[in-house]
Image (cartoon, rainbow, N blue to C red; front, side, top):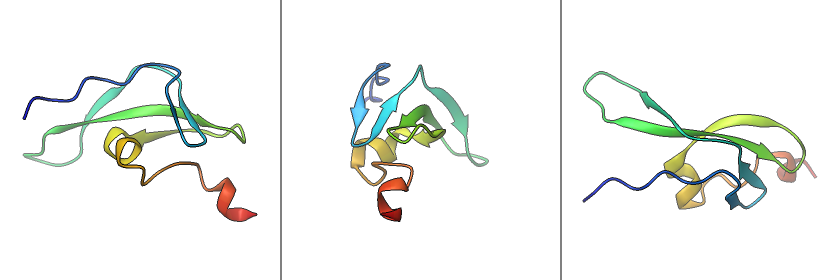
Length: 68
């Protein structure tokens, strides 16, 4: 299966918006590089999240919506 194309700045996933280009990170010896994206939640928190988590929908916010 060919690799997925990087997601573009401004793309939204639930409460998260991609802020810029991805960063490839190798998470373990012998592992394929994974793409991580810097995102901003609607509450203003910024952090890095894996592209797979965004695409699958397993991460849709920073957790702020669960606090209510």
